[in-house]
Length: 226
Image (cartoon, rainbow, N blue to C red):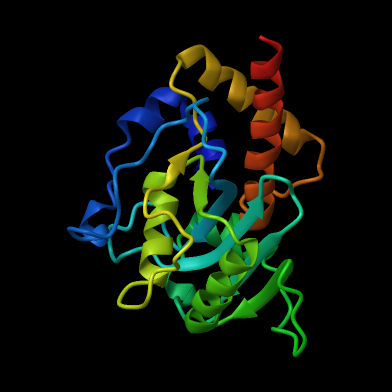
């Protein structure tokens, strides 16, 4: 959700943005975000994810989850859920009404599920249970990667709050964003090029997760050539 938002505002805004989700994490809900790194993490599976929620600022009330999308690094497995019982339309900001809600398109949960490609409207409980099954199906320790983990990760923690944390899911989110300013600028150019193809809908959690993966693959290819 946030990369295009910060592109419009400028990268400096992303670094200086005053909103913090610390008050929702609590004391033990999340570890420090781990920055983009080229180190060997071959024992873990990368899963790129994105969320959409009711209000970026969260001034009047805490933001509530609208949708979440995940895709594995190899692109073979996807998970997309639109939540039916976590928010009301009155909670949604004008931006969300204009740019997020019109993109919601998931059908009802089917009787027969393909766990490799979940795409459905579900309750929070169903989302938690299905996401656990989806992660278990991967069979490897999994790290979730986001271009805005300080925002997105809160909703993963919230889904499993007071419930069993999935055995294979890391408790530390990972950031897709590189640390060098030149690399950040280059990454945002790649992001804009992806949306310009019109293959992806900006502010749709599944498509935004796909863009994060596509850009990561481009960056990985560049690192291998250098």
